[in-house]
Length: 213
Ligand code: DX5
Ligand code: ZN
Image (cartoon, helix red, strand yellow):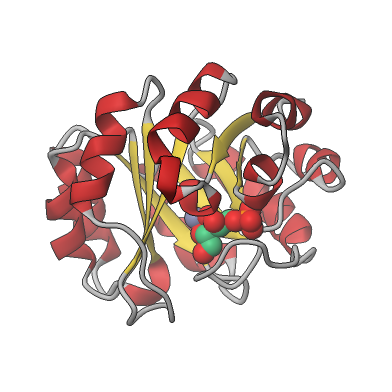
């Protein structure tokens, strides 16, 4: 299991130290939550802060857009060369076109599904995707309770992925901890995002390793 700590739960007063600690602590990706105050009722960080994160990070960035105007934000973040940019299917009228745009920058495209959205709704996009992110909370905030129906959803998605594009990864974001990690693994999940679980632990490295099962 790959682990992507969400810096939404980091201490922004000492962000550089926290970034260094998760990288040295063995994380696989750095999950960056971008919110616009429209698609979700919260706002976070933009390219200025993410640019300084990118400079000190020794692990690749995984940018999760929670915004209305996806194309604008893709263009804004493309120059920071993240490994992945993920966008919500619920806020995009032309997902196929946007996937091609993300690829044209040499960035891996991913699509995010809110808790109510079915995996079948993106079946015909799977062959063009590197990852699908299943939300296991409602997007907008860290520290929420895990919505356990994501386990069944991940199993369904896994079947579609095996049929359409076995290279596509499944990522789960929200309320992930050492209590639900095994179920996620058994359902075929490849990558987990963990914010409050990692940054709420005294020892980030120990928390990260407890999820890398
Ligand atoms: C929620 C974000 C998550 C969040 C996860 O909108 O997408 O990445 O930071 O935080 P935890 O792990 O605390 O649920
Ligand atoms: Zn996220």
